[in-house]
Length: 532
Ligand code: HEM
Ligand SMILES: *[C@@H]1O[C@H](CO)[C@@H](O)[C@H](O)[C@H]1NC(C)=O
Ligand SMILES: *[C@@H]1O[C@H](CO)[C@@H](O)[C@H](O)[C@H]1NC(C)=O
Ligand SMILES: CC(=O)N[C@H]1CO[C@H](CO)[C@@H](O)[C@@H]1O
Image (cartoon, rainbow, N blue to C red; front, side, top):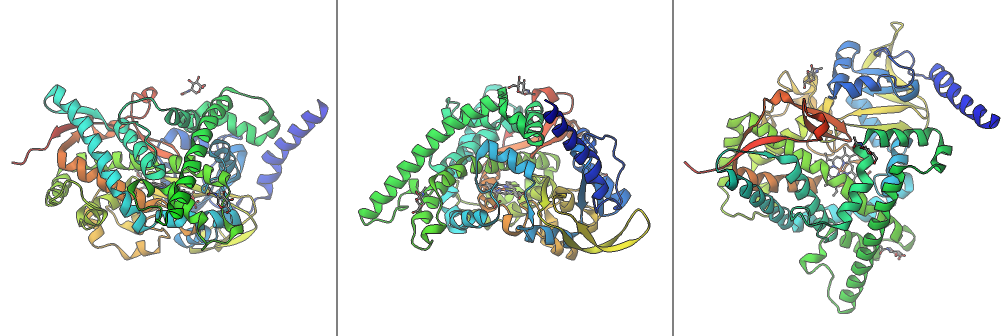
């Protein structure tokens, strides 16, 4: 007992007193911390909008520090040179241990979680499945599922006749879940059909902790005091039960696919000749079996299994909320919606290919503008794995008036990567940075060339070796959804835009201001589009 108390006391003193005194970020400018336990995190939680960080930048300049959980110093910077350095040196700047602990518990050692050599190995085997040519083959699934969603909403509209209020988050979430099931594993999760599905239910149980604050708090406690991990709790039980089902179903999928591929190659046919064989998991297993990859670089079945929940957690709500925000933006600027519809109606087929979708310049600009202004993942984080010096474009002035052209960072220091804030920085994008203006993509300001993102001068899909592997997948899926939905419906706001607020739980989700307890929702008014 005494030993336990001593251990806890030592941890507390070390975390609360010794570490802050030793931090090299001590003299950076930044907001005062209102709490020893939560630092500035409670403010961030309360603000419901990543805009809080943006106001800090106005007050303290583009490079600053604030306090995190247990009074620890965190680095926050808008400096594109610093961010490029951090994102490109992914060996020196890993995912924060807490995030990795959390994700590892839920989904296992998938691509999002692993670091270093293991990450390079997984990424090498996974990359081919996410290429242009592979996504082209999946476009039919996206269009078909988008049409199923359109018909589902049309039925709702037919009941009331005229302008109908629809919560778009529910339908979009089902559509993107079905799409990742089919495109990811050739597995029908039946979400749009409304049929119960054990895998769907298992994932819900596994991922509840993402939006349940009490569950998240339990995780943080267990991370800080690993000894608590020995005590079972409700969340752990729920997660474990879900994982057991996901494991059984996932392993069966992997075994079936392996058998199919072997069969096809012994028949002398290339597996993948039939549409059912073009899903990400099949491609991944094929890549793992191909002779291009040395035996010792291949993935174990366990590693492959971990990619199933990984694709699901990374590719489902990011895309559905992204599309939801796009519809919300279009409802607010009718002339953009009309111009987009005009372009889409000019296409002669109801079932466009990827190349036909990508040839539509205004659709492309609308998707880019949505990804800029409503980046589904508004922030991410890194942790320095060693002491380092981070270069800066713009020097900062410390609390003593000294000017520095670089940041000294210590091993273990947390860094917040501002995705959304950088996307809509007035310094980079100009005075109209907060407006939804697809036309800006016809001629971009020079300053945005310095943003270190993997796609379109945006940080939306991050950058460097750990950038989003699925960005082509989600862009084509969002285009397919907008193509089908905007051709079919005219969309208006159901509530004043200010009544819709954003809350972030990894992904930013819409809520009705005075109905937070009802969960995420985004009501819009729909009526069938009729040509004049
Ligand atoms: C609009 C949709 C999407 C957005 C905004 C998005 C955003 C991101 C971001 C910001 C990261 C980097 C996270 C970090 O390193 O801290 C990331 C990583 C990742 N994303 Fe996406 N994503 C989207 C769709 C998808 C889809 C559809 C898939 C898969 C089917 C996917 C799979 C992944 C994976 C596996 C990683 C980890 C990559 C690695 O660490 O090597 N994402 N995504
Ligand atoms: C969080 O999970 C617990 C246990 O599963 C549940 O009782 C509680 O209602 C959940 N809270 C929210 C906000 O969903
Ligand atoms: C990948 O290849 C390795 C080595 O050949 C093998 O042991 C493993 O079972 C394969 N994994 C899958 C999922 O095919
Ligand atoms: C720095 C800055 O201009 N911050 C703004 C960020 O965006 C919100 C609205 O989305 C504004 O309220 C902030 O002033």
